[in-house]
Length: 442
Image 1: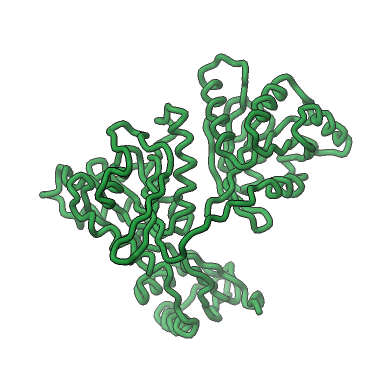
Image 2 (image 1 turned 45 degrees about the horizontal axis):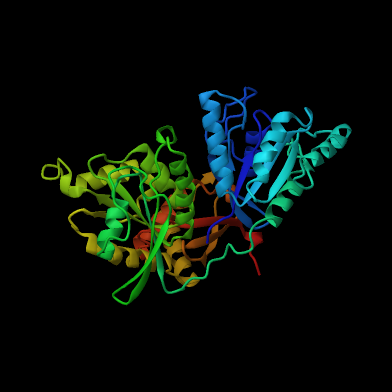
């Protein structure tokens, strides 16, 4: 299902990025006293009271400025507001209501979206009365917060999740496999979809960004039902000039959230780019099954001199977190190996739905510990009590130990490799939860 999208907006220098960082508990946005530091939207997955959502940080809106950069920021913020399910309007409680705030409020009233007013910098009881001034913008009950001190964030987030749409759950056939086709613009996503379907369902053009929205297409092959989601191409922020293309990025992220398996398209002549890593990284972190499709292999200049094995080695080095993903060399233009795509997708879907009995998992743990004993630290030895599988899609495992802080990531990687060597789990990430033995749930 798609996660609700929450956009944080407001005039410059009211503390939007500080609030963004506090909610996400990560320092992703640059925080500075100079207006205009945040020049583009930044995305982060967040959670409150078991409600997951995507948080968007935007640059400050300066309605009347003619400055080119500030005008661009204003357009980007408006696009974020258009796509958001809920908007958090941040204002400065110390400065009070300004004309700039009123201008932003006028824009927000035109969105017809739920708006929560966050009156920031209310970090003492003496400033509580400042909150009431913001009733004048007629956007509902304001909430006093201090983003820098994390005060009032619970009340704010309670109002945010209460405003989420009630129809985010999608009706779907449990037997179908949803495929999101992802990658940079102009790597051949629409051409691949058309070749897979055998007809021109999606507009194909050499102009990056031709596909503006995610398009669902249902088809059946070998008695298996599939849904193809052809996503708009995602490109580096510095290279995105059209507001509509910026808008399409959020749709692409939503398409990944809705998918079971993603086809990560890499353009063979270009190789793996930094943007490829970012796009693939989002799919990996979202726990989606993945098939890497190296497209345009028919025009790869070194294909006769450089083997696919060497190209695959380079892929594995550049996309180190996708070691588990199968690689397919194809050409959407000529149809080379395209017939294998659904076969691989079906295989990956089966792999990510695999369940392993607890007794079998613990036999694997005993063998692994015998081959490579757990690490120790300051005289304390890590002891693994047992492991059980908690979920599928992606497979999630809970490992109970004596002291979780002793479980070094390198040993967890060793356990993961043993799981993959024994059971496969090809094409799917694996998730692990390390718990102390007294946290065993009844």
